[in-house]
Image (cartoon, rainbow over the protein chains, first blue to last red):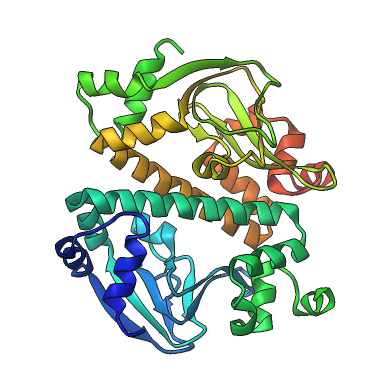
Length: 189
Length: 189
């Protein structure tokens, strides 16, 4: 990651074009953060003060059920946003953990700065509207993938969207995302 | 439903306050529609030109899998928005059907008018941002409810959010929403 500012600006400019001044103003609201492989960015029960824009690396958002079984809600890699969105938006305690599968570089955007940005900048309000719509669409796709109850289809959907995941994610995590056992995964693929 | 315009205005004013003039301008973008019990508002493969704000009645959003088995993605009743959001936002063909469980009165908002409204009105852009965030949160909750894989918990979550659903929804639809057979539902509750 040579230039995080350029990377973030290019990401925002996929939705809205910015002047240099606007870009500098927007980026001043973000804080650059580095995390190590295995580090927890969010832990259950803690406050969720930030949403993260991943610059490089890979993270997983995990739900642990009453039997301490882990379920992967989503993966996020470079050019993606991730947090416990429910906790972040409603400013409640985290129900999910966010853990680094690889060393990760990300921009953190605090809840206050998120609210400031879309209040102070009509362009950023448009950007966040488009992004939250995309998040809503992504969630609907994931809900449908559960309803189809077909692990092979879920696997194919995941890989067509993120071909590099297969190389980067341990098989056990892939199985957890798909909602199948490690053994079933091996049998299927 | 005595006054649909007042009902819609009150709904929007939970997020942003409006002058009489603004409210009239906004409501002029919506079209009042009546649907009969059993009627399909959206069918698989068709264009999805509208998002619906339900004024009275009850609808279900359904995914039919390759084995012609029906899965209920969500229910929507008065004061809720519903459509095949993925198809609507991306202007692709419907993957889902939207069917009336009761006679239903709704405002339809076309995709063009949706885009016009948030371009012409900063207040409506704020409103839609809040609503799409709420949709994203709701979807995350539903994804988590699948991951917990506990039908009783899903049932309790559903009823705590919508206590009247139990009376209004046939048991077979409830089972389909929860992802269990009719027999399992009877055994559990």
